[in-house]
Length: 257
Image 1 (spheres, one colour):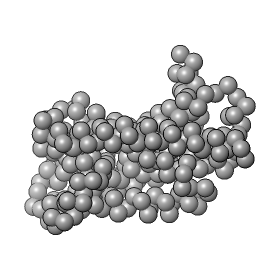
Image 2 (cartoon, rainbow, N blue to C red; image 1 turned 60 degrees about the vertical axis):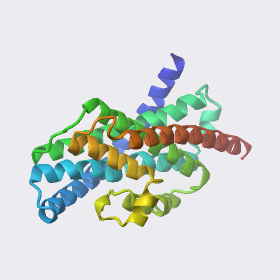
Image 3 (cartoon, rainbow, N blue to C red; image 1 turned 90 degrees about the vertical axis):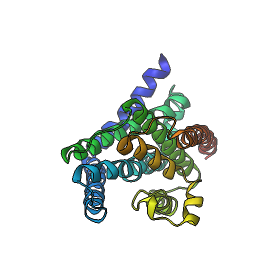
């Protein structure tokens, strides 16, 4: 029970700080909306789809690439680096707060932001007549796996590669943008040549996008997206464990400084 209260306290502190910096929250809302609208209108025009069909296909890619990626991965990197620069971690060392609670608190905070973005993207798509075609429970599970994967990667990058706030944008851009394009977040994977499709099989964003697209736009069941779902589940678990180990290594380094 003590872990639970500490986790909620850390998550609440991070969300309150983000709430005070309202620009970040506004931009995290504007970005996925703008990408959704652009993708939706482009698909409607070029693929000759109705607006409802276009937004049903655009929403999963927007959520996987624009919303969850930047809020969970980029946000986690920025939070970890900011905590180190502000010496927050050193102050936590003399408090009774456990490392597990701190790790889970950051995870819960960015999960809450991601959940808000998911609702926002789905609400905007629904305004153009888009409907969730498949299982809502399965869709939520895919989103949760995506959040776990992104936050885990964010901990790895934030603790091992970024040292200053200035490093965050360059780090996210260098690692993330090529993976987003290869994952089909901005271009439909149907346009990819066979060589890129073979490479994309190793890209978790590709599996997130294909799983969400299959469930949302095509009404696919678990059997239809089994390969993507299993890959994403294993990857998310590995990234959470690797993120936790990276976080523990960072704590040992910080204590010696």
